[in-house]
Amino acid sequence: MLTVLQLKKFLEDYPDHFEITDSRGKPFCHMVNRPEDMLTLSTQKPIGYCNKCGEYVYPEIELDYPAYCPTCDENRYSFEFKSLEDEIVEVE
Image (tube, one colour):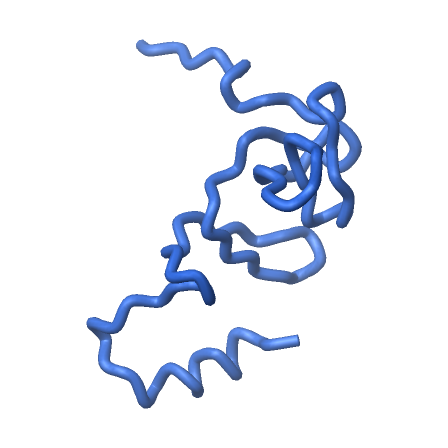
């Protein structure tokens, strides 16, 4: 596993203006601290909250499931997570 300290040392040799992408050239657009002292960088924004652990779920891109929970390390059917689209935003 790569640690934040290792990543910082590795990035010292690169100019600040360099963009960071995944292996397919997709930019990282979401970052979250997970419960077990882990930082998750994602090229996809979360689409909901897992009903089991309450953490973010992300779109599943390889299998026939709508979502994946990195905390549980499990795919999720639509009834196994609360969609962010379901949240009501109140404006004051």
